[in-house]
Length: 335
Image: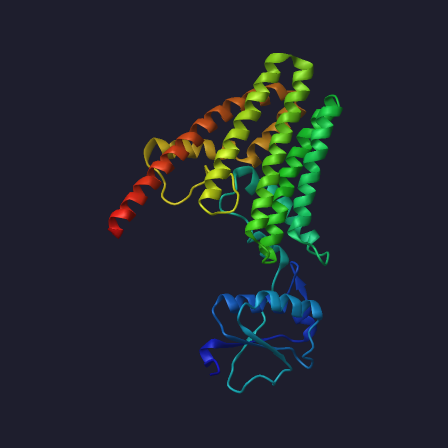
């Protein structure tokens, strides 16, 4: 049985060239197909002016994004009679990239990192074949270089590490933006991105600790090692909880999820969320290191990390108790 008129849509392009035009890494025709598929349309007709031949790369995009929807490309006038045509939307690559901003972005990310990373993403998506993994690899390379710089260099190496840590925080946004703009977001990609982010954080903290410990004594060294240990423990516990819940790896335990706890707990969350987000402390570390206050930065972070791990443990314990209560209620309902 053929789809009814309500299940069929027609999008009109002035020419096949317009349909082939790549916007933020995806052909315009494929973006139209994805929007129709997301709306539940069963059959899509693309009218392409005098020519019905789409480029192979456009056909590849359409095949990837059409889902179970049937798609036909025809010359103008070749669509079924009575099917009203919708003009192809005029798309802007920067508008698409701006829409990839995440609601949970911190204050530094919103006002500094995102505007820069979105322009980097825009440039990368002009290159055919750009994938999110390319930005993820770049972030990992930054992590290795900053660690080497902090160990091998003197004051300049320390400054290089701080600047590259902030740069890695900016680049970290690129892979997600490219993934969301090109409809390539996957759980594997999110897991890999989160793992590299945490590895970068730990390499930076370890490099800073070893550098300062070599020049400043045992107390500085053990303060830094405390911070490294606390972050490693907290990250491991959060990763275990998130993976046990079946989600992709993430370390955003403090970002709002589900119902917000009342009173003091909510005030604590509001306090810790911005100052424990990577965008905030990467920027703060860079400023303090460039200003010659690396030791102060490490002390601040060790203090915040101590409060953070206490809250992580309390949140995990509270979540475990709530899960036990829900399981008990489910068992009673089943009985």
